[in-house]
Length: 196
Image (tube, rainbow, N blue to C red):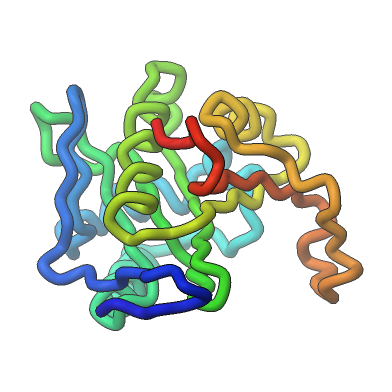
């Protein structure tokens, strides 16, 4: 579905689901057989340290989450990939473009990785692919990352990928006190050199 907004053509159509392949990774759609790994990811203390969400407490929570995510994809409201290695189809993390603002041709990026796979350049590889997808396929004009101010690893990853901190972001101005500990990083498609 193409949407013409402020002279920009935004493309939101996630059917068929866009599986993405990188040098070491395969980014595919979330499915019910991923319920055990989703439960582990969404209940892990380290993964959830800086995330403001309830931890999964059962496989039922994981199933509910999978169904909710896939319903959003069907409605073209968000796009969510499972990160797997090219040799193994098992979920090791997730990455998504969500909270899409049609008016601003912008989406929020979110990502998480099981601790045993962190520090190996996996999220850098996945992030590069998703940024390119957002700009090239969806025709987004910007991608934003909302990150807890103490989440140094995620902040460094965004900065490494040319995201710039929004120094004007103030949770009070937008009336969202739940964002008090968050910082916002933004990557604009319009600035030359932003494509990775």
